[in-house]
Each structure stands twice: as structure tokens, then as C-alpha cells.
Length: 301
Image 1 (tube, rainbow, N blue to C red):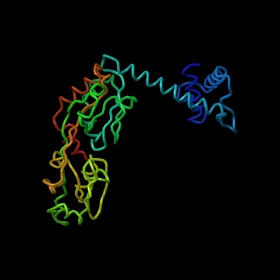
Image 2: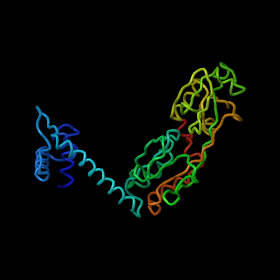
Image 3: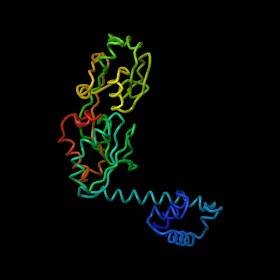
Image 4: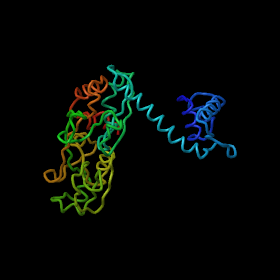
């Protein structure tokens, strides 16, 4: 039994035909059929049967499919682990961010790095929760964490920057709706927030703030756009507020705000990985506001 046999079996079922499996794998349909026949011979059971024009799983084929998927996943994971052990800045790695850190801002910031390292492939994921490094979910995670709560023998954490969220509204919105003087005044306003439980990205405990209307948007660019378009009061980074194409004003800055320390984290097993280290060194060399929106990107919006 080889990997091509398992792939032929898996994609024939998941894609619906030997023809589509052949297209996926770059083989001919007749070769896929031969791989399936050889697989059934080695397994000693019929795995597929015809139902009309389609191949479907037999009862034993259904059992084998789950094991085949596990084997293929383990093979891919083993390859990825070997790539991580490379002492060269090459290969593929996965990076995760929380929704409040815009992947658009990150991509703009790291484009020179990617252009200078064409041998590197990057998969960026937006994850609300901290990823599971042990399961190999990602290689690097960038988000707000408290390094004191980490197992330092298993996870490395390096400080990158601090997000200082404040509330803002457009000048036009304030002229129409009035300037809130206290938290209680917000009950007559429209609030825009990252989560249902709080105005800011990270909610330590639910905040019971009353408002006339509540909009939940987990994208910082969309929140900035909503504030600029007079929709309501929302959390922005001061850097973004300064670059706004519309006049925006601070709201209750001394009463409602949040600062989040952002760290570059990765499993200790990647401490010697050249790619992970080179990427961190590059991020460190960028301006303080590289993860908070760049002037060129804001101008394009």
C-alpha cells in the first residue's frame, strides 16, 4: 500500500469520481482505477461499489476511509515537522492572528520580506482563540497574551508592540448625536464593538454598557470605515484615527480604553528554526506601527 493508492481512494470518494480524482492528482482516470484495484487487493476487501454512474463506499470502505484520512494527515504532519527542523529560511509555515489584528496590515508590512524570500510559503489564519501548538495547528501566533501564564519550556514569547484602543466617533456624528460626557450617556448612542460582551477586542469580563444600537464587527478596517461614515462610536487605534480621511474625535478617553501587549509566540521546538527566527527579526526591524495600519494602506481604502 502506498500513498498514491490512499490518495486515489480518498479523492475518488470526496470529489465524486475517478475522473475528478485524476485531475486533482495529475494522473489519468485509468491509472486511478488501477490504483484502487491494487488497494482493494492489498486490503483484502471491496472498498467501492457502483451505484448508477457513481462509485460509493461499501460498509468496509466507509471504515477504511476514516483510517486512510488519518494516515494521510499524519503523513502531511510528518513532512511539516521535518520542514520545521530545517536550518534554512525556506519551506512553508503557518501564522495565526486574532481578528482584531488585520491580516491586510500584516501583509502590507511583510511584503518586502516575502519578496526577498521567494522560497518561503506562508499560510495566514485568523483565529479567535490561542492555537494549539502541540497539535501542529500553526507554527507562529501573533496576539495579546500574558507570557507569565505560558509554559516557557514549551512556548517562546517575544514582545512586538502594544495596541492602545480608544473610542472615537466622526465629527459629523458628534454634531448630530451629541458628545457623551459619561458612560451613562452612551445609552442614547450607536456603539460599534469587536465582541458582544465588550467594546474592545479582549474581554476580561462582560461589560454591561447600555446603548441605543449595537453593531458587532470583528474586523478593524470595517470598524474604522463605520466610524468614518458616521455610523456610531467605535474602538480605534490612535494611529488609525490620526490617518483617518474623515475628522474623528475621541470619546471618553479617560474612562473607556484598553491596552494589549502583542507577542510573537511559537513552540520551543522551533527555537533553532531559521525561518521562524528570520521572520521575527524582520518584524522587529519594522516601525512601531507596522501591525496597526500603514499610511499607504489607509489611503487606498
